[in-house]
Every structure is written in structure tokens, then in C-alpha cells.
Length: 49
Image (tube, rainbow, N blue to C red; front, top):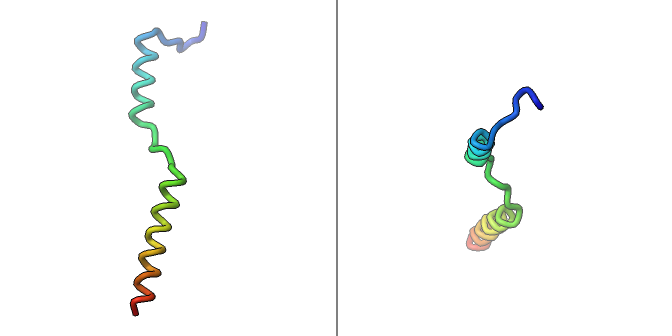
């Protein structure tokens, strides 16, 4: 037995805590779309000049 073994109730509490404090997943596709949209917008502004 470990010194800090948790019961079922404690495990659930820890799982909830980690779910709440987990950083947002980094979505590479979404990031690329955002960068692409900004690039196209800037490109459009340059061609308008």
C-alpha cells in the first residue's frame, strides 16, 4: 500500500481538478487556418494599394 493511496471519492475529486485545470488542446489545423486568413487579408490590402 502506498502512503498516499486514494479511495474512489478522492480519485474522482482529483480527476475533476485535473479536467478543470488542463490547458486547452493546441489545434494545429485551426491555428493554420487563422494564420492563412490573416495572410490573405494582408495580401488583399497590399493589392488594393
